Image 1: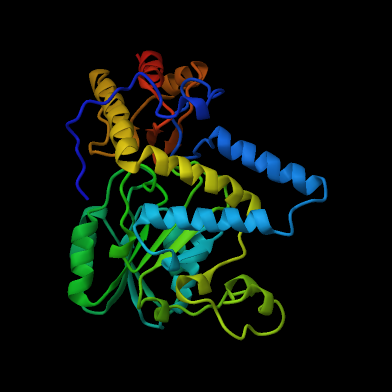
Image 2: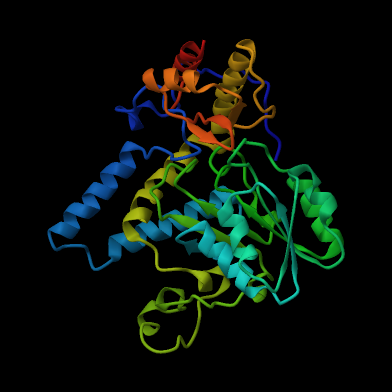
Length: 361
């Protein structure tokens, strides 16, 4: 997908001011935890209130929210809704894929990737896990490689994987691809139809509650997975799949559904609707412009931020005295792999960036 990176971007206002009336200045830590919008907070409060009153609606409103969240993620991922399964965690979905690999299979992954994407394969002593540098992933695919697994944007430093090259190498050798979009979906356009499997948790850039996660499975790849963890929610008919072995699993990726935590999806339905309304292209322009302002500012202060067009900014070598000043100024950030990590999103403005740069000076 092409993006217009030349159009001017107004950074003086958030993209959704009405949704974040109480957000404190300096929150630049979306790569750790996205902030849910007011509409999601209100929806979860309402669901809790009706539950507490003994009127949860016989699951009806919850199921409507689950369906809305699944459909919204499908649209954001550019896949049919039948290709989207509900997940509780990234590690659980990756574990499903790892469990289905035959003994002796080889998996190639980035050596510094997030543990939820890597460890499920390391836990299989009967498969080979080869860990390489991020820029070497495509070149590391070889005859006998069964799967390439990588995060589209890296948690530690924000670097963006060369997915076209990785996909081309995988196709050349008959390997499948697994992409973790948790650190990119919501600010970087996503086309899950290009990969066999895409996993994504929504609690970061999709501004959703913990527990709302998704797994996409490309047509034909369903046969590579076994519904080992299927419960009644994975049945074609929920009403007839409650007891005993499930007579008929749901079609497509839905057979891999886990029972969704309903309150999480009540919030996620609203958050994903906001992301759709704002548009990922517009969010991308806003977020990456703020990120570049941060990189330029830290460069002017004598640091060497990790380069690249990412919304995640990593600055190595920032002294503890400086991070102490940032905290005292009210900035929210993370320390990852020796980097000061900052992650602006659509609710941030240039004022948040300038607060951090002033405190770092």
